[in-house]
Each structure stands twice: as structure tokens, then as C-alpha cells.
Length: 177
Image 1: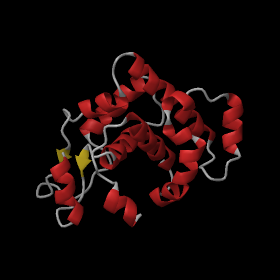
Image 2 (image 1 turned 60 degrees about the horizontal axis):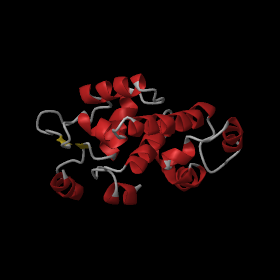
Image 3 (image 1 turned 90 degrees about the vertical axis):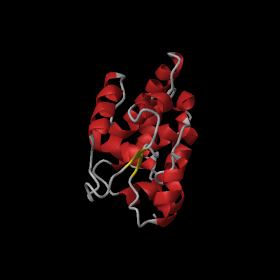
Image 4 (image 1 turned 45 degrees about the vertical axis):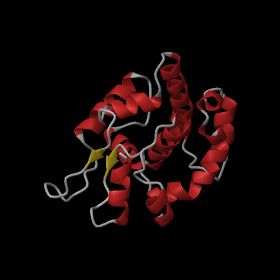
């Protein structure tokens, strides 16, 4: 978890495949610990074709059954089916001339939010932006994208800098916004 925090968490991402990966992993975390998901991340990368939406969207019911037997991922039918569904939703965005990147970043006006720790020293589980993102993603057919999952995605993908100011990553990530 230290390497994830020190190298990835909070770094602004603008790549649809990487954003799709984080969306999948954050959805997989529902009801579980982040450590459980991180330990299975290599299995997810393999099982879901490096999170290439075009390939994942082609998965069939037989693929779902195969993945339900894959001990390298979280074997939850709803989470597996939502990943396949969400790959199709990413493709639909792209066919419409947009991207997952453009949609997600629109909720922060394309600039990473910086938390004001002097006002509120507690990290929220969701925010107004995350609730709006969740609503829009659901409207566009995405699944496993509740407000808490969306806020975790925002943190992971650098849409918000939730590192504490005392953390060495705070200023580094802030400079990337």
C-alpha cells in the first residue's frame, strides 16, 4: 500500500484505460478493504485485458462464468458484470466524441481540487461533486458507481488532492494539477 500511496494515489490521470481500471478497482472495493483489491490488482489487469475497454466490452456470459472461477480477482458476479458493462459505457462515450477522461474531469472544471484542511480536517467519504458524478455515470449506463466509489475514484485519479499537507506527496501532487 505504501508504494501505491507514494507513487500513484492522487496523481492526475487523463487516460481512459487507466481511469477505467481505477473505476473497476474502486467498484470492486465496495464492502472490502483497499488492501484486498490491491493484492488482486495483477489478476484484474490480466483478467480484464489490461483494462482495454474495446476488449472487455466483448466479454460474453461464458467469460463471466470463467471469471467467477478466477481466484486472482474478486469473484462477485455483479462486480464482474459491471466491469463488462462499464467498458461498453466507456466505448459509448468515445463513440459520441467524448471520453471517460473528459466526463470525469468535467466535475472539477478540469482542475484538480485542493482540499482546505484548515476548514475541515476530516477526509469525507463523498462530496457534492462525487454525488453529481455518480448520478451522471448512472444516467450513462455505468454500474457500481455510487457517490462513495466516485469520491474514491476522484482521490485515486487525482481529481482531488486528499494528501495531508504534512505528507511529502501533498506538494508534489499539488504541482501536477
